[in-house]
Amino acid sequence: MRDWISRFTVGLLACLAVAIPGAGAQTPASAPLDRVKVEAFVDGAVGEAMRDDKIAGVTVAVVDRTGVVMTKGYGVASLSPRRPVDADTLFRVGSISKTPVWIALMQLVEQGKIGLDDPINSHLPPDLRIPDEGFRNPIRVRHLMTHSAGFEDSVLGGFFVPDAEHLMPIETYLRSHRVHRVREPGTLAVYSNYGAALAGAIVEHVSGQPWQD
Image 1 (tube, rainbow, N blue to C red):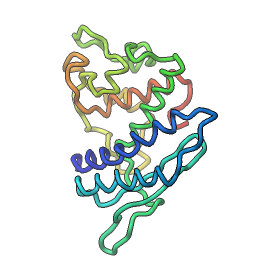
Image 2: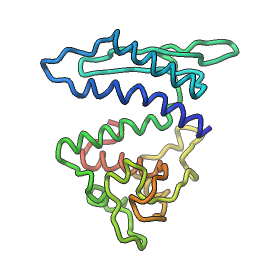
Image 3: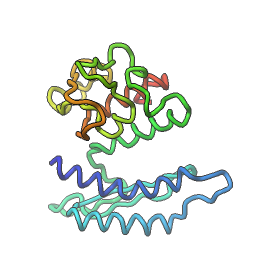
C-alpha cells in the first residue's frame, strides 16, 4: 500500500511541481495561466504517470493567484460498478497533505520569520522541543523538509485512527508519540511523518495561527 501511495504521490506532484511555479512567479502585470496550455501539460504528465506506474485514477486541481485554472479527473474510481474519476472524486489525501506544510513553511521563510538553517528548537514551543539524545548537531528546518532529521520511523500508536473521535490536536500527538533520534541530521534521508508534523507545529507556532486555519 505504501509503495502505491508513493507512486501516486510522485505522479501527482510531477504535475504540480511544474504548474505551481508558473503561478508563483506571476507579477501584477502578467497574464493568468492559460487553461488550454495548462490542461495540455497536465494531460500529458498525468497520462505518462498513469501508464508508467499503473495508477487507476487521478484528480487534479491547478490554482493560480486569480483562482481555479482547471480541475479534471482521469481514469477510474471503481471497476465494479465502473465509475470514472471526475473533478469531484474524493481520494484519501495521504502525503499530499505535506505539500501545504512545505508551502506554508516557505512562506514564513520568504517573510523572514524562519531561516532554513535555523535549529527547529528555536521555533517550537518548549514542550515540543527535541532533546539532543547524545547527538552533537541540532536538527535544522531544512532537515525536516528533506526527511533527514535523523528520526526513527514510526507509524504506531495513533498514526491511523478508526474514527474522528480519536483524532488529536497536532501538539498533543507530537507530545504523546515522540520518536527518538537515531543518527546525525543531514546524513541520510528516511521518510518521516513525525518530522513533517513537527514542521506543521512550527508553522502554527511562528505564525500564531491554529494549524487548521
